[in-house]
Image 1 (tube, helix red, strand yellow):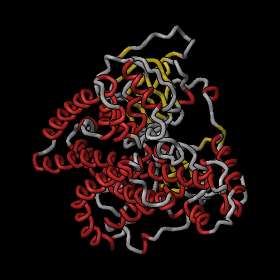
Image 2 (cartoon, helix red, strand yellow):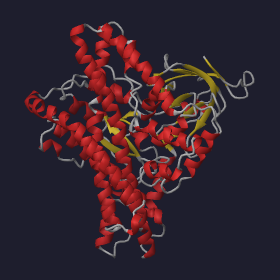
Image 3 (cartoon, one colour):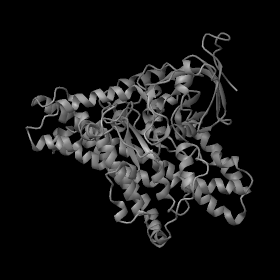
Image 4 (cartoon, rainbow, N blue to C red):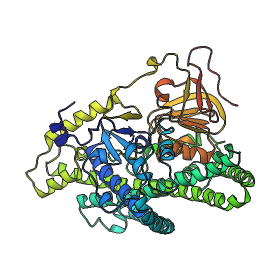
Amino acid sequence: MTDRATTAAYDPVRGDSEPGRYWSTTNTAEATPLILSPLCWSVWGDGLETAWLRSMGQFGVLSRREQIMSDDMNRRSTAAIYGHQAVNVDVLRVVLARLPGVSPDDVERDLLGSVRPDLPREPIARHRLPIIMAKLPVALLRLDSRHAALCADQSQWWKREVFDPTAGGIAPRTDALDRLSSAAARFGSAMQLHATVRFLIPAAEGAVIAAAEKAGVPTLAGAALRGYGSITETRMAEALWKVAHEGGDLSAFLAVYGFHGPNEGNVYTRSWREDPSPVHKLVDSFRARPGLISPRSRESQTMQARVAAERELLSAVPKLNRPTTRFMLRRAAGLTRKLELTKAAYLMALDGCRAAARDLGAQHVSDGRLADVEDVFFLTVAELEAMRDDSSVRVEDRIAYRRAQRAIYEELSLPTTFTGMPSATSEVTAAEYPDRRVLEGKASGGSRREGRARVLTDPDADADLEEGDILVCRFTDPSWTPLMMLASALVIDIGSQSSHGAVVARELGIPYVIGTDIGTRVIRDGDHLVVDGGANTVTIAHRRGQDRPFVRSESV
């Protein structure tokens, strides 16, 4: 695409991997679904890496020297490659091998849905064990208080300085670039806590799965690790349901959840705070389904099923092991709730970055240094600081080049896992899979459903999901949650068992198959599907307009 010298100076999201380095976009594509802009990566790249290093440092896993952020993407936990954010799986395995109770294989399976065969055993840093044993319990004891304080502070900050910064006649006290830097710092703080929680979950869930397998009831583990209740996304869906069916206040809803929006992980998108039209469409869709069960009622049903599974599992576990298993069940529930709350906290920070960046862009359009407000997203924070420090800095050519590169990257499709620099290809279509009728995912759950496929690649599109329809999409983020409420089942290209789509589906009792990779490219809108959450399969029973006329939908 370009030579390396040009790339280094002009394209911060192109990337450059070592030949043997193993990468995955499984979870990061859910976090930042669109092509990264330079400003996106300016916030995410350093913020996420700092969060990762500090979270491992507070566990005692990494020394102070090891917490120094590398300039080499091959030594970092994530990178931008052809505009896509990717996880450095090899780095995660090496570091997490030091953490007691966490298996690198479990982490890889949790991220990717499977583990590469014949991997060498990761070295254990025995010299770090005394430090880990001293620091890890302290970090765990402080987790609840740190989590509560951060989430409360982030919510108050977003309402005060982002949602309505002029409330009470008080204007923002700092300039736009300072607010951008402050919001980026808040993103890093929220992401540090999110990373801490994220890498504790496999240990808790792994302990429950191991206990169930040892007791001879392996299927009970999955049933006991769902239906926790009080997940923030289900509360959001309940609030929107009340707007539609109980006359709730939409303005009040936006004052709490307005930081969400289509493709919200990318900074240059527009949140519901800026453009509430997608929320109005969702309310209309909810109202068109008067018999739609409320999220709270659906959540209650899954909670009852989880309690029954827990009781059965604990009765099968030997008495001496029951206290530990019960503790790990509670631990998994608490960590899952915290995971979704810290995700909301970092999304609030991204919305703060978005608001400050557009204010800054408007200022530079006014002073003649940018042609368009959106040009600001094609510059990094460091470049914006250079513009403030030196009025002679010109950025027109750089912005034009990066816009052209984004157009190239948008036409490419990367595999979900790859070694070295990937072989980027054009998007594939269903025509390239003429006989593909059965798909499998990396994770699944729930019962079996049969119905019409509604293939949606944009959460902002007019959905019009009718009763019994199956939602087929590339990924989900929290803004998709109300739409998921309208589906009888979910088929998602990107994700794993810990992904947003799987978490919400389990809480709402929606059958799902996630991580199909190619579902949206193989399944056509209107195809008749059979989704089997227990068997982890999606079957295209009948193509739209072929085999036989489409039959409305049925649950099996």
